[in-house]
Image (cartoon, rainbow, N blue to C red; front, side, top):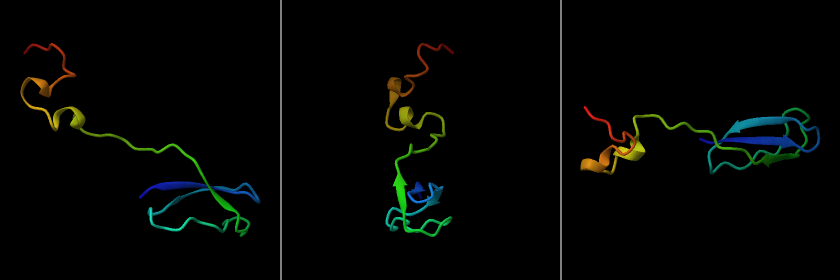
Amino acid sequence: MPIYDYQCTSCNHQLEAIQKFSDAPLLECPSCKAPELKKLLSMPGFRLKGSGWYETDFKTGAKKNLAGGDKSE
């Protein structure tokens, strides 16, 4: 589930909320209780783990290890 950043336009309180895509946006500020929360634009954060899934998953033969260069065994 994505993490959304919100800021209250009344008291400038900022918070993060984990919500589903289908959830309605938050409206009430937990700090001042005013219905003034607005979503902020933020950078998505994610990490690609593994041993080169982007390079090796769909390639075969000599094309399989392009990042290895001219390694000799």
